[in-house]
Length: 114
Ligand code: 5GP
Ligand code: ZN
Image (cartoon, rainbow, N blue to C red; front, side, top):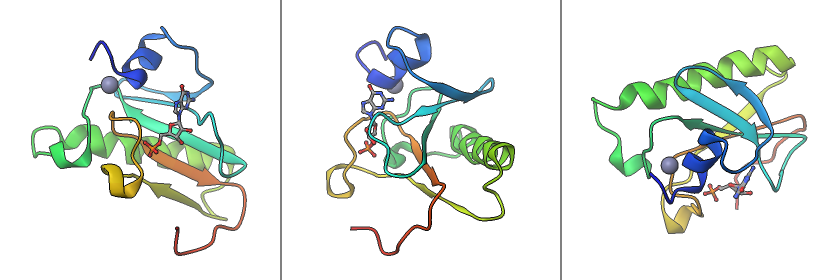
Protein backbone atom coordinates (compact mmCIF):
# COMPACT_ATOMS: atom_id res chain seq x y z
CA UNK A 1 0.00 0.00 0.00
CA UNK A 2 1.54 3.27 -1.14
CA UNK A 3 0.64 5.36 1.93
CA UNK A 4 1.57 2.72 4.52
CA UNK A 5 4.58 3.54 6.72
CA UNK A 6 5.73 -0.07 7.06
CA UNK A 7 5.31 -0.79 3.32
CA UNK A 8 7.60 2.21 2.76
CA UNK A 9 10.12 0.74 5.25
CA UNK A 10 10.05 -2.62 3.41
CA UNK A 11 10.70 -0.81 0.09
CA UNK A 12 13.56 1.17 1.67
CA UNK A 13 11.83 4.52 1.06
CA UNK A 14 12.04 5.17 4.81
CA UNK A 15 15.22 4.06 6.61
CA UNK A 16 15.13 1.38 9.28
CA UNK A 17 17.61 -0.69 11.26
CA UNK A 18 17.07 -4.14 9.78
CA UNK A 19 17.94 -7.15 11.95
CA UNK A 20 16.34 -9.99 9.97
CA UNK A 21 14.79 -10.63 6.56
CA UNK A 22 13.56 -13.52 4.45
CA UNK A 23 11.23 -13.88 1.44
CA UNK A 24 8.11 -13.18 3.50
CA UNK A 25 9.23 -11.23 6.56
CA UNK A 26 11.14 -8.03 7.36
CA UNK A 27 12.26 -7.21 10.92
CA UNK A 28 13.73 -3.98 12.26
CA UNK A 29 14.40 -2.12 15.51
CA UNK A 30 11.45 -0.25 17.02
CA UNK A 31 11.99 3.54 17.06
CA UNK A 32 10.91 3.71 20.71
CA UNK A 33 12.30 0.55 22.33
CA UNK A 34 10.61 -0.87 25.44
CA UNK A 35 13.27 -3.53 26.09
CA UNK A 36 16.97 -4.05 25.20
CA UNK A 37 15.73 -5.95 22.14
CA UNK A 38 12.50 -4.48 20.74
CA UNK A 39 12.05 -5.64 17.17
CA UNK A 40 9.06 -5.33 14.84
CA UNK A 41 8.43 -8.37 12.61
CA UNK A 42 6.20 -7.50 9.67
CA UNK A 43 4.90 -9.47 6.67
CA UNK A 44 6.10 -8.17 3.30
CA UNK A 45 2.50 -8.54 2.15
CA UNK A 46 0.30 -5.66 3.40
CA UNK A 47 -2.38 -6.70 5.93
CA UNK A 48 -3.84 -3.92 8.11
CA UNK A 49 -4.98 -5.75 11.25
CA UNK A 50 -5.46 -9.24 12.69
CA UNK A 51 -9.15 -8.82 11.83
CA UNK A 52 -8.17 -9.42 8.18
CA UNK A 53 -6.70 -12.87 8.93
CA UNK A 54 -8.09 -15.61 6.66
CA UNK A 55 -7.08 -19.18 5.80
CA UNK A 56 -5.70 -17.75 2.53
CA UNK A 57 -3.32 -15.24 4.17
CA UNK A 58 -2.47 -17.35 7.25
CA UNK A 59 0.98 -18.09 5.81
CA UNK A 60 1.95 -14.44 6.29
CA UNK A 61 1.13 -14.63 10.00
CA UNK A 62 2.89 -18.00 10.37
CA UNK A 63 5.99 -16.61 8.72
CA UNK A 64 6.27 -14.00 11.48
CA UNK A 65 6.55 -16.70 14.16
CA UNK A 66 9.04 -18.70 12.11
CA UNK A 67 11.15 -15.55 11.78
CA UNK A 68 10.90 -14.75 15.48
CA UNK A 69 11.99 -18.25 16.44
CA UNK A 70 15.02 -18.09 14.18
CA UNK A 71 16.02 -14.60 15.34
CA UNK A 72 15.56 -15.43 19.06
CA UNK A 73 17.95 -18.35 18.71
CA UNK A 74 20.39 -16.21 16.71
CA UNK A 75 20.69 -13.61 19.50
CA UNK A 76 20.55 -16.24 22.27
CA UNK A 77 17.30 -15.29 24.00
CA UNK A 78 15.36 -18.43 23.05
CA UNK A 79 16.14 -20.09 26.40
CA UNK A 80 16.03 -17.09 28.78
CA UNK A 81 12.83 -16.09 27.01
CA UNK A 82 11.11 -13.33 25.12
CA UNK A 83 7.64 -11.93 24.47
CA UNK A 84 5.68 -11.30 21.29
CA UNK A 85 2.74 -8.89 21.18
CA UNK A 86 0.41 -7.92 18.37
CA UNK A 87 -1.99 -5.03 18.96
CA UNK A 88 -5.30 -4.91 17.09
CA UNK A 89 -7.08 -1.59 16.65
CA UNK A 90 -7.37 1.42 18.94
CA UNK A 91 -8.19 -0.16 22.31
CA UNK A 92 -5.07 -2.33 22.08
CA UNK A 93 -2.94 0.67 21.11
CA UNK A 94 -2.34 -0.13 17.44
CA UNK A 95 -0.93 2.97 15.77
CA UNK A 96 0.49 1.56 12.52
CA UNK A 97 -2.04 -0.29 10.37
CA UNK A 98 0.27 -2.88 8.83
CA UNK A 99 0.30 -5.92 11.11
CA UNK A 100 3.45 -6.27 13.18
CA UNK A 101 4.65 -8.58 15.89
CA UNK A 102 6.49 -6.76 18.67
CA UNK A 103 9.43 -8.92 19.82
CA UNK A 104 10.67 -7.95 23.31
CA UNK A 105 13.69 -9.50 25.01
CA UNK A 106 16.78 -8.81 27.04
CA UNK A 107 15.18 -8.13 30.41
CA UNK A 108 12.70 -9.74 32.77
CA UNK A 109 9.24 -8.68 31.58
CA UNK A 110 6.31 -8.08 33.89
CA UNK A 111 2.74 -9.28 33.43
CA UNK A 112 0.04 -8.14 32.85
CA UNK A 113 0.81 -5.37 30.36
CA UNK A 114 -1.03 -2.07 30.91
P1 5GP B 1 1.67 -0.35 17.57
O1 5GP B 1 1.39 0.69 18.62
O2 5GP B 1 0.94 -0.05 16.27
O3 5GP B 1 1.45 -1.75 18.05
O4 5GP B 1 3.21 -0.28 17.29
C1 5GP B 1 3.80 0.60 16.37
C2 5GP B 1 5.26 0.66 16.70
O5 5GP B 1 5.93 1.21 15.60
C3 5GP B 1 5.57 1.52 17.92
O6 5GP B 1 6.23 0.73 18.91
C4 5GP B 1 6.47 2.63 17.36
O7 5GP B 1 7.53 2.97 18.23
C5 5GP B 1 6.98 2.02 16.08
N1 5GP B 1 7.24 2.98 15.01
C6 5GP B 1 6.41 3.97 14.58
N2 5GP B 1 6.96 4.63 13.55
C7 5GP B 1 8.17 4.04 13.32
C8 5GP B 1 9.20 4.28 12.35
O8 5GP B 1 9.13 5.17 11.50
N3 5GP B 1 10.31 3.49 12.45
C9 5GP B 1 10.42 2.49 13.38
N4 5GP B 1 11.54 1.77 13.38
N5 5GP B 1 9.46 2.23 14.28
C10 5GP B 1 8.34 2.99 14.25
ZN1 ZN C 1 1.73 -1.82 4.62
